[in-house]
Image 1 (cartoon, rainbow, N blue to C red):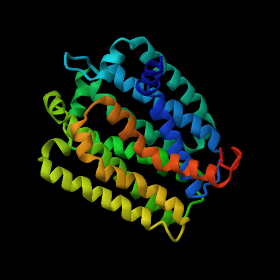
Image 2 (image 1 turned 90 degrees about the horizontal axis):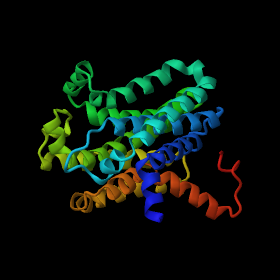
Image 3 (image 1 turned 120 degrees about the horizontal axis):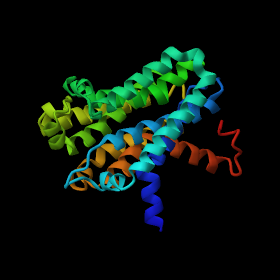
Image 4 (image 1 turned 90 degrees about the vertical axis):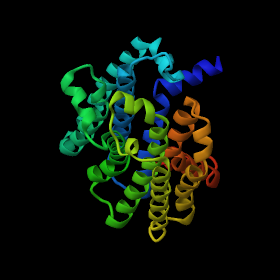
Length: 291
């Protein structure tokens, strides 16, 4: 029963939607953003639920399909229901944010472009020919929605911490994406999906991997004049974990390692941030957490 519940939360993309909300929350706290974040949290949650279920709904099933794809193959109606539910709910919660429609539209277009090559239509499949598209689209969307867009909506951020946090997030997520793309390198090539990763040999690929983590770590450290040391430490923890987990992830390519552990690393600093606040302030209230 526990495994079935865990699979449902993980493979239905509820887990990754929670991660997106936590990352957004941390951005709001670190940058001291002042706006009505409640509707934005709801928008982010349901938009993530919609886009991920749409993506997996379009993913074809093969004989050697992963456990996640096989799970989804038997739950097509659920994936479509979550796509529709997420789409309708995100459309509802974006209404109070429509004055920022231009910046929000950028996120929507980029999210669509990531999944568009899977749409069974000749025009959509031409997007597979966009060089470097897959990885950069995904990294950009995650950074933009959870880090850049909240700042653009609030409009009350300082340049240096705003830029440092965006750089930290972008290169951390890109390093995680490199591991995903390394795992999917063969099927991506067979499907005609082009990205920077599919053109690189492993030696240069992992040089890029560690370079991204180095940039992410330096960007986090540069926040020290603007952010308490313990918060910067929470940002560095996932950087260190991702740097040391590479060989383990290469040997253990199952969906639980990738979609639970690696995906969770994007929001791990936010989880540590919340946990530390609770430990430092027992009985902490939701408003103290800015929720």
